[in-house]
Structures are given as C-alpha cells and as structure tokens.
Amino acid sequence: MDSDESLQPAQAPSAGTETILLVEDEAVLRNVCRVYLESKGYAVLEAGNAKEAMKIFQSYDRPIHVLITDIVMPGLGGLELAKSALELRPALSVVLVSGYTDRPLDREAIGYAKFLQKPFSFDALARTVRSLLDKNRETLLIADSKFMRVAVQRALAGAGYTVHTANDGEAGLRTARETLPDLILLDLVLPTISGLDVLKALKRDAITKSIPVIVLAALSEPTKDELLNEGAAACVEKSDKLLEDDSVALIHTVTQIVGKPKASRG
Image (cartoon, rainbow, N blue to C red; front, side, top):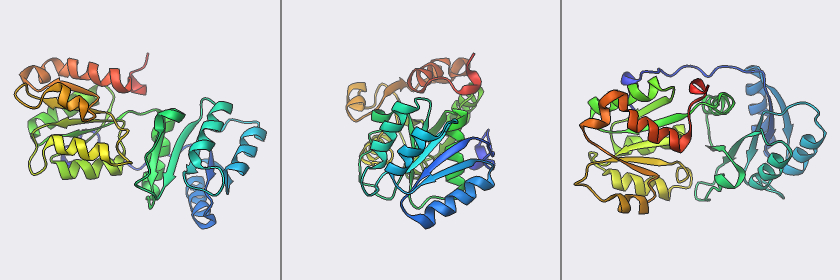
C-alpha cells in the first residue's frame, strides 16, 4: 500500500454519538467492543444472540443507527437477524462479523453491509462504523504505474471518494481484505501477479467477492467479455484519454456502480 502517495492520509477514526446494537455470543469480545465503542462516544446496546437483539429492535423507542452482529451464532444467525432488523428499521446500517473466511456472503440479500473478519483491530471496527454512518465511498486502486496511481487518485479524491492504493497484485489483495472498499479499480498489467489473476482471486475470496471491480485494460489485452465473465463489473479502456479532463469518463463509471460520495450529493 502506497501511503507515501496518499492524497488523503490515514487519520484516526472520528468519534460519534449514534446508537449501536452490538450482537455477539462471546461475552468477553462483546464487552471489550462495547467499552471501546463507548469510549468513542457511541451509545451501545448489547445482546448475546439474535432473539435478544430482536426484542431490543422491537421495544427500543429511539433510533438505532448501526447493527454489528456476528454471522455465526447459536440459533438464528447474523444474516437472518439483519434481514429481520432491516424490515423493522430500513435505515439501519449493518456490519457483519465472522471468523469463517470460506463462507460466501449474501450482502445483496440484506442491502448494504460491511464485513469484518475476526480477529479485527479496534481501528478497523471504528473505521467501518464511521464509514457506514458517514456514507463514505471507499475505493482501492491497484496499478503499478506511479503516474497512473497519482492521476487517478487525484481525480477520485477530487470527486469526493476516499482512495487507497497498491502497486502490485499481492499488495492489492492484502489491502482489499484489510480495507474492504466499496469499489476496486484494477490495472490488468501488473508485476508478479497479473491483473486477471488478481480479479480471479478477489472473486474466489468470500470476503472480497462481493466488491465490484472496474478493470483498466488496453484493447490488445483480454477481451471485455472474458473479463466480465471472470466477475468484473465494468471495463474501461486504458489509454491516454483515460487521464484527460480529470478522468471524467472513469468517474462517471465509478459513480454508476457505487453512487456519489456523501460530500458530492446535492
């Protein structure tokens, strides 16, 4: 990850005052997370299972802004809990937590959700919650050309997107798992691991398979149909025009897939 190039340096996650319902059957982990989130200013409700959580959703007469739930729990699981909770509170944001990396995630079935893999850091927890509440749009740009990284990052940041970068496939896969961005922009020509192999790896991984990927490819490289068949959300021709006029065409494609960031909404 090229932190030295970042146009938006990493900062400590901002605190909040919103209400979070934390659902975790492991009491020690639940208590530790509660104490940390409360130290950041959040009001935290807690439940040891989905049944307790649903009682809170039904009886609590004030807004609950975020549900953080373990996916695998005795009885009703986290996915089923989230679906039921969203029926009661459609504006609810959801964070799914699990230590099982080989289980496919049905994020579309419950609306927008973020995923955290155990073990996770407090920093990752805080950033995930804040990103949901602020409706930030985070992107990851994987490209070995420093010129392309800087130019595309500047365009994305100028449009209001948060941008992470990586200069090769291995760093890109690692950063994708660590940051779980809303969108990945992937150069097809990379050192060591090709962009096509990175795309395949992203789509095999239960944690990253739901993240849409825009592939930046020249016409002489694998065809658009092949890339789309491998799971790409879109393909953008990599040419000199890509970086012209602040990458307007690329930003348009990004916006079509993940929407405008909160800062850009009218």
